[in-house]
Image (cartoon, rainbow, N blue to C red; front, top):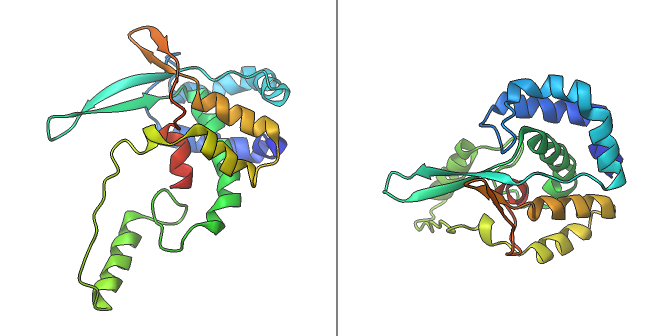
Amino acid sequence: MLELILERRNVLRAMNQVIANKGAPGVDGMKTNHLKGYLKRHWPKIKQDLLNGDYRPLPVRRKEIDKPDGGVRLLGIPTVLDRLIQQAIAQVLEQIWDPTFSEYSYGFRPGRSAHDAVLQAKGYLLDGYTHVVDMDLSKFFDRVNHDRLLSRLATRVRDKRVLKLIRRYLTAGTMIGGLCQSQHRRNAPGWFMQSFA
């Protein structure tokens, strides 16, 4: 499966997605508009490190975003290179897992949007349903158990190198004020769980 993730077409698609998404630099300071040139120079070594199991993701950069209600939302910003690799992984895993998800699940799914969810809800109203349950699972992505997640993934992902790489992403840590805090909790970061929301 790792070879499929690192296949040229998949990586190019992931690169284009990362560049299109733009986003802030991670701890290494690289901007998305530098990714293409960086890959031209360094991809053979990066790919070999990934295949050999030697690749180590960098910690994510922590950024605080003010919430309208006065609170603070913490974002973890991976490096642009790590976003590329994560996107390449997600694209392959999505093909395996998406067909198993509920047809009524709209979050972070290809070809589905918030607008589709609204249309579905409107259909329920027209069918006579009168109650709505609105939930916001606070810090859900921060609290997902890593071991349970990886165990579930292992039911469909047989390539141990892929599982090891995902574990490395889950435990890469966070850079706060120039210091790296390791990920002691066994919880998945949002980027990964969004693929399975």
